[in-house]
Length: 391
Ligand code: UD1
Ligand code: UDP
Figure 1: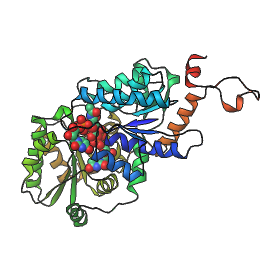
Figure 2: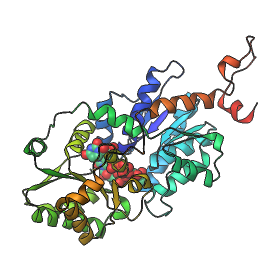
Figure 3: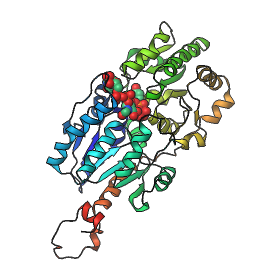
Figure 4: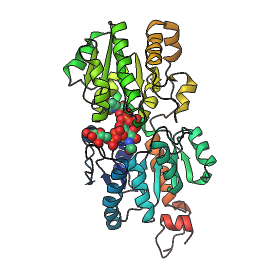
């Protein structure tokens, strides 16, 4: 059973669900919590996934505690009824950790995708750093995207035999989507894409940036737009009203700023492939952009994804308004600075992460290699519990 609820989870579990659907070893059941609504449905639609269950929990102004409580309460009877052999969760959202805990309480093994990311600061990203650490305490199988995330897990006390390094399934999803070069449905975006001008692609939503920091992002974008009138800024704006209220008032009346609704994944990855640089506080974009050779300026003070920073394609710039303007200006004016960052690197995956996920999960659920099993009836079922406990 795969449980997910937000846009980034939907993107990252889609390749796994597709692989489970065609696998002979598994029957796949999908549960969406609906922590996000439109942004979640958009992704499911693109990947042709029709969830088996929809908890439909989203409400505007939802608190972290409300999300957590609703997911646990509504998922529990489904777990009790279906008794899945394993529950797959992704990343560090409230949906993810609540689902993991609900499964753990039912003694159902939890498979954690994108395990082992750590910023080292429990308050940033908030609440994600805490969420992923909690999930690491209760998961049975930890699927680390990189060797660094494996090392983080081991340092946190996870046994090596419970970890597999798979890469990040976001790269599988990116490869599936980007080559379709989906046409843009928003005419304003289509005009920008066809203009041949430089494009700065911007996304922002982080909870710890709400308020002053996000207002600063809005002001910084307006300053960049005025200073570089020949450059297009595109902001597919998150559905969260808190984000919209902070950023959008600063962008009124600027001809080279295009504010759009969240773009469907195919359109977004197409626009990413046409962009000059990316300015973001998103996690997933830090993974996708390097793979396409796009410099990423990360509007955060730290990151749980240091691999791209070390490879030189991502740069942590914080949320100070002046610094944002200066860093974007540097890339737009210095060919040398730009070339140094615009290198295609792939520290996060090779597009085969879903296949490795399936293999690792099958191994967890099969304590004895099938070809080593004796020919006679063993008189019982091999389950994850027997795998773990040796019953
Ligand atoms: C959530 C995750 C975050 C992830 C982000 C991806 C938590 C605590 N946060 O943050 O880790 O990086 O998703 O975007 O799990 N809304 C809509 N329609 C949508 C989606 C959101 O209207 O399709 C609005 C609703 O008013 C909702 C609000 O956005 O209440 C916030 O959504 P929520 O999931 O609580 O937080 P995010 O900031 O999106
Ligand atoms: N994305 C998208 N449409 C958009 C903006 C982003 O499909 O308009 C995708 C993006 O490619 C990435 C994911 O959404 O895979 C990132 O989601 P978000 O920034 O909401 O969450 P985070 O990655 O920070 O958890």
